Length: 203
Image (cartoon, rainbow, N blue to C red):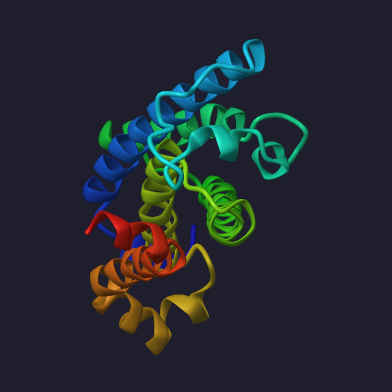
């Protein structure tokens, strides 16, 4: 671990709580999605519990090619990955100090997760044309997990001393909450715009 990380070790408890809570929410949502996908595979007439209307329709999403990006249902990734997030948060709450290589590995994982979620948001909106509520729960927890792990690693020097001491790092730390809120707002606006023809019929 770098000298910067030793001298300026960030407060880990809020991050740890966020990892545990976010990981649990993501794990439950992924597990429910996987169960629903298995039921749909067993019975093509099964209507998933999250198929509510033409827009909020898990069935349409689950049956798309994008729902099995690596050849198996995407929720399997969440069921495998979120326990790692939970375990990391639990270790930090117990007072553990994790090695730099571990944080780099976690950074790679959450970055891959964020990239996957961004791709799935685009696919859901502009290719599939439907939204999966349980998927959206996963989107909602992956974003802050990625964001706050990245900020922690920047501050701790895990991503390099130059990044830790940069002006950009200070700005990101100062604006971390507004930037996260802005990301949520952007996705919400994209959803409203994409499906406005349907939403307007409900007004």
